[in-house]
Length: 131
Image 1 (cartoon, rainbow, N blue to C red):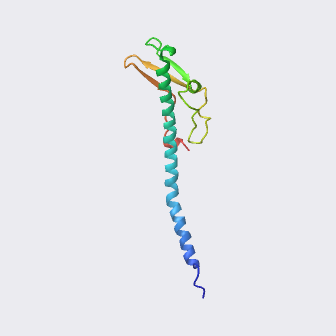
Image 2 (cartoon, helix red, strand yellow):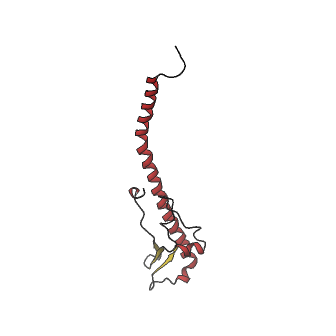
Image 3 (tube, rainbow, N blue to C red):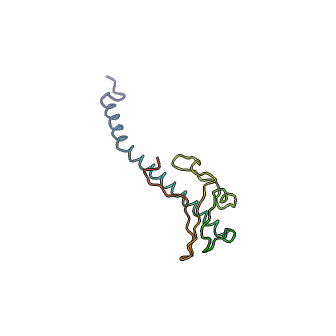
């Protein structure tokens, strides 16, 4: 008799255990990847808003924003050209920059009551939307 190696029953048992573990962990891993992509996408939106805030701080008077004229917009291309945004952001949901076109605009709204700027680029997405 050959005492080296595994028996057929032992091999089937190992394969069954591996299959069971993959059935348990695959949905959790996919959910975790989806959640991280969504968070990364929303962080990208936040970085664009931060770059816009920096742009407005540096070019406030050139924009001509006042209580009478309290709304303007700036493009992603403007932010890149002034150095406030280093490069066109990529969409982490599908690793493309198609979602962030250089001509996309960020609305800048000045609130005279609070003397603060508000920025509208796009809504943040929910976890289920980033697949």
